[in-house]
Every structure is written in structure tokens, then in C-alpha cells.
Image (cartoon, rainbow, N blue to C red; front, side, top):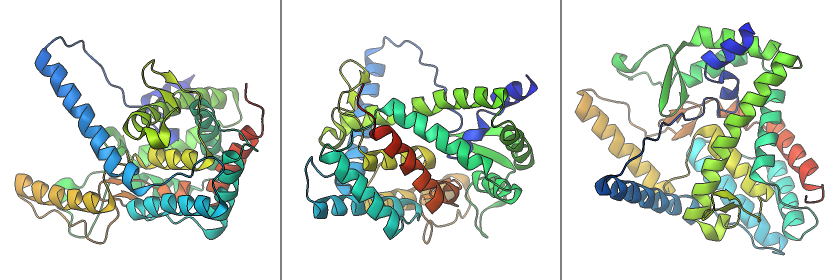
Length: 328
């Protein structure tokens, strides 16, 4: 029981591994004000516009029965999109495998997976990856989740606390984080470990669903049918392997896929100027830094531990296993 209490207390730290730890806990109070309703509608439209500017403009998904050339082009747009935002590079072998899987799904040889199945796959993959992490890698995770760092980072921005998500800092030091994550790792395969996995799966599912809902509404030409927006329930279309990989990246990096490459860079520069002006400091320039991933300027995560060759192919293995089953 002490491990279960620890797991809750640390905000699902195990899922810092693929960086889906700590679901966004949002208390939604009832609002009746027409002004507040208008503000919510405006915010929603802004999210849709920013998503269309990023995901909608820079990623192309192939249509059913598309040629192998078209599918390869589609895979390259996703790989380039991920790289431009996080520095993660998908190898040629991985892209070729992903293209073959995408083609098999688009021509009906394999079925698409549901958002719930992707949540299962991500959970399984994360625990498999966690079990193989060394103490040095756990320490690297903690350092990365400590936030963006640079030689000229003002001292007022330095601390020893863990940033579980881009919008959330928890009162856990890097040393405590490593100890707690090591304790979770030691329980993998036990009854307690299975309880961890079940809890983490719920967190993952919430993250996946939130993104699928947004993408389905913002870019229906790309994600239409994966979520029934009108009835707020899973749709009937499902996810192709390429969409599943992009969703995994989005959750792992806490990258909502807003903004084109040009506009993302502009946003970072504007943020740097605003931080410097409001805080009265010279905050480090985003020049030479990626927005997300290892030492990401917007949000730093050990994404290179998640999107390494072995882990991505483990993810693809599980997608193949699920997609080979008959629907239903």
C-alpha cells in the first residue's frame, strides 16, 4: 500500500517516462454568464485556428488506397513536423516500416485501432521502457523535466523541482523524483505494479481522448471520424499507424501541435521578449533550441528516451498486433 500512496502522491510519475504523467486535473465550475460563454467560444475558436495552422497545414495524411509514393510522402511530412518541433529524427528504417504499415491499413489489409487501444499500447510500451531504464537514465529524465536550461538562464528561473507537464510544476525535487520512479520500476510485474499500470492507463486515455477530440473538430479532413464530436464519444473511423505515432508524440512531448514552424518560432521569440520585459531579465533566446523535447525551450522532456529506435519499434509492434485482429 505504501507504493500506491507514493504513486498517487507523485502525480503518476511513472508516466514521465513517455511524459503523460499527471493528467490535467481541471475543476470545471458551472458558468452562466453570457460573457464567460463568449470567452469560452472565442478560446475554442483560437485553439481550432492554431491547430489548423500547425497540424492542419504541415501534415498530410494519405487517403484510402493511396499509392506507396503518396504514403511515403505522408510519413515524411509527419517525420519532418516532429523533427522541426523537437529535434527527434525518425530513422529511414522506421519510416519505411511505418509507411508499409500505413499502406496495409489504408488498403484494408489491417484495421485501424481505436483511441482506447492506442491508450493500452502506449501504457504497455511505457512500462516496458521503464523496466529497462538505468539509474543514469532516470537521473537524465529528472534533469530534463527540471525545465529548460542555458548558461545565461537567470538564477531566478533555476530550481530543483520537476515539471510534470508544461503547465504544471510539482513540489518534488529531482532526487525525490528519481527515488520514487525507481520504486515504481521495482514493482513492475507485481500486483502493485499492475495497479500502477491500470492507474496510468486511465491518465493516458484522458490525454489521448482530449487530443483526438480537438483534432477531430479542428482538422476533420485529417481526423474526422476518430471522435464523434456531436455526441462526445469515440467515432467509427479509428486511427492509422501514422496518426497513432503522431498522437503518441503529441502526448509524450506535451505538444498540442499548434502553429506552423514559422509561427511557432515567432511565438517563441515573442514569449522571450515578453518574459524579459515583464521579469526585468535577459531571458535566453530560443535561437538554436527546439520548442519541445530534450531541453525544449517551451517545455523540456526526455523525449529522446521515448522516441529512440527501440521504443518506437516496440510501439509499432504493439500497433501491428492490435491491427491484425478483426474489428469487434
